[in-house]
Length: 364
Image (cartoon, rainbow, N blue to C red):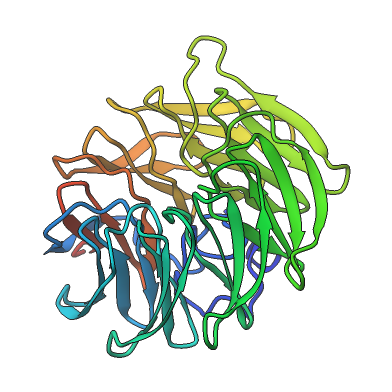
């Protein structure tokens, strides 16, 4: 299947075969640049000592990920050996690292955004928000954007962590913002969808989001796709500034917490009704569902016509994007609410019992 990568991922932002941030790129599409082998096996497991809600980033042969106990880890992608460990002030929740020009950025539950040197784990600077950070940082040029439970969306300098601007909402900023064409997009816990100019923090777009939103928006071709706690999946037109379709399962009213992956004409995400959904991006029509045995908070990654996703049933699934058919699964034995990262032909995901798994090509 042909992937629309030139449209979805600006070449200057993503190096070949890297996964530098939550959802893989600033548009949060969840689409990998490189391919993954059709047959996978477990290559290594790293014992992190505490649960992983944070999703990995993979850059230059290193895996970066945070633990609930507050450690930011750098692990060798090839061997699974620890390269370094950096201690945050408090635990690291769902905030996932972003790696840009040799620096790793991540938020913690004390409200600190940390900048850490990727080569050796040396702390460079911190920025303090007024409440916990579960949002993941997104880097654009010399700016880092991140949300906090204090209700603010912050933009700080990559050089020294100085505040450049902040935009105040009326509730928690839980989701990770997406960035496209100089605009930061965010669906909020205050049920409002916003666009804020990256240059100065000025609002350029606002309309009702359609529900309380913990998921992060995937932005493709001037549309944003996200799930809500009102049990809907939304498609928002960023030009018309309105919702153009929404999907609700007529038989199962459960929230969508998983962030959508978007490629070609398909939107894929997990639901708290234990299903993985694939919807038509133009119409919202359901194309297929795949049942798991527990809620699916993990956000899917897509590579080469396959969907990679965890479930709280303790299984890591590989599904066919076209049909939803299960191609492979791995039983981790503990909930997988974090999301997979894909780079250099490998897939990495952490579990809530503190194990980080790396899958790679099975022997022919």
